[in-house]
Every structure is written in C-alpha cells, then in structure tokens.
Length: 249
Image 1 (cartoon, rainbow, N blue to C red):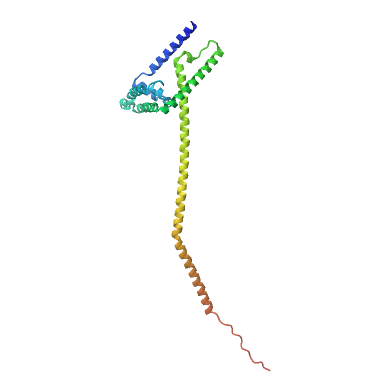
Image 2: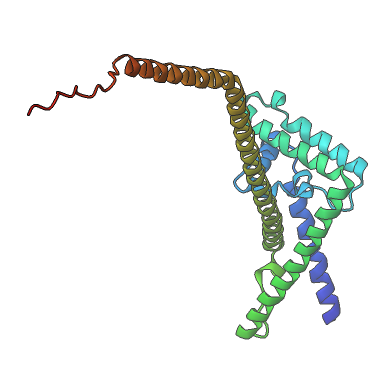
C-alpha cells in the first residue's frame, strides 16, 4: 500500500507539472510577448528549449512548426501597439530556432542541461537532508509543489546558461582588447616606419644642398685667406738697417 501511495503521489505530481506546462504554453500574443520580454528574460532566453517551449526530445520538424506558430503570434506587424517588445520576442524565437538547427550547438546545450539536472538533484538532496534534521517526516516545498520544483529547475538552468554567456562575453572582450592592442602596435610601427622613410627621403634630397653649401663654405674660406694674405703682403715694409756714420776723432 505504501508503494502504491508513493506511486499515486508521483503520478499526481507529474499531472500537476503537465498542467503547469500546458498553462504556460497558452498561445496568445500578449502572454507570449510578456513571457519572452519579462524581467530576467535576458538569461532565460539563452535556453532555446525554454524559449520555444519544447522538450529536448522534440524533433526538428516539430520544433520548426512550434517556431512558426509562436513567431506569427509575436511578429511586430501583428502587434503594432507593442512593436518594440514584439520585435524583441520575435528575435528571441529566431535565435532559439537557429541555435537548435545547429547540431554542434545542440550538443553543447544538452550537456549544459544535463549538468543543470545533476545540480538540481544535488540541491534537492541537500534540502531534503536539512529538512530531515528538523523532523523525520518533514518534506520540502519542491517535492510537494510542481510550481516550486519548476521554479528551482529554471533558476538553476538559467544560472548555468548565464554563467556560460558571461564567460563567453568576457573571453570575447579579452580577445577584442588583445586585437585592439595588436592593431595599435601595428599602427605605431607603421607610423614609425613612415617617419623613418620620410626622414631618409628628406636626408637624400638635402644631400646635394649640404655638399654645395660645404663647397661654398670652403671656397669662401679660401678666398678670405687669400685676401687676408694679399692684404698682409701689401702692407709689409722690409726692414732697413740704419746707415752708419763715420767715426770722428
């Protein structure tokens, strides 16, 4: 009987879960736009399965059908009064569909979801353990309420997607900074080479002038020396010894 009661409880729990999922999947424009643009959607929308409201087992054909239904509902042209939010919701759906159309991306996302499932079980196990410390019959909210269970599941999953996105962005930022530094170094080297080339060009162009100036300087210097020498020669008076007078006795 105990086993039967446990089975009935689990079936009831899964029924509640399906009801919540069915309720969340109401196909109306307003609700879908709200869902895809609400606070926290930036990270919730990183999970393409969450965005398209499908399971991991959904075939690609069914995924495209669901995308078509949702995209028609939130299309900006169908929602002129909320065009900006509708565009944001439409973009989220388009990104999700493109992501799930890429086999490599699907593999990475499924690995992330497996990690999220493992973390969820660890979290629930720890909560049950803490509850049992208070009372052997104590239960946790997530075991009694499908809403609480799904809330925790979504929170853990969203955190993993957010952490991955933040790390990805940080890596891209570092790569961009590195490229920027490399480009700045290249420009600096190009500018330095340009200045050196300009200097060498000007040096070559001015060489003839420098040689001519030096020759003119030497010629002028020679003329000055010759002029000075000529002037010295013209003013030179030879030494005449005094005449000797006869000795008188």
